Length: 178
Image (cartoon, rainbow, N blue to C red; front, side, top):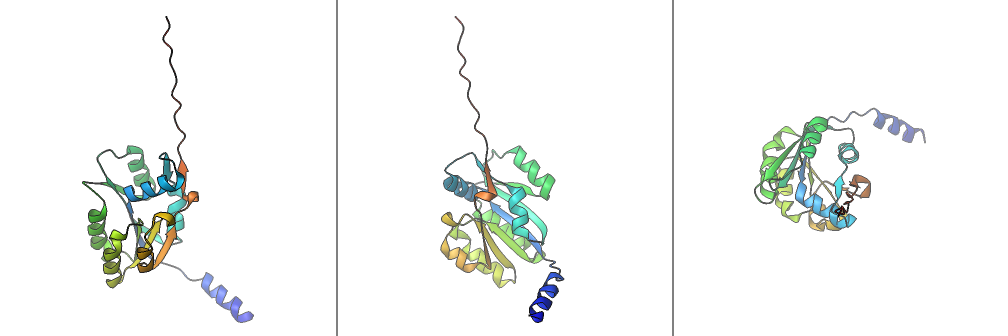
């Protein structure tokens, strides 16, 4: 019994000094939470999710890849102000830009967390792991490929505790006065 307590005390004194890059496939994650919540006004709660993903590790990079030109200024400001993150618009899907960035940053971090359940990232995961990088996926379980879950070092489930729904704006019926 004393041996167990001694091991627990030693584990409490361990300092984890890993640097982590979080790379987000915005369109994939948005579609996943919209499907799961059955509501297109649902958004990720970064204040709840990021600390849960990091678990006492240091955040080195946070990049939100998003297809399209119309990206919320509020999202860009929030990611920059709270996480020194950035939003990168993509011409088409985020797969290629996210993969290129992951390969470029791999030598500078210990762990890369890809927020997407897309099986298109399997070859990227394999490559990063062969380079000695720990690779984790964060995604909604119901929309995540089981093949990618089998390839990564760890799978973080994104659940309803990790998102919120924006209130819908009530449209006012304006009656014209006659």
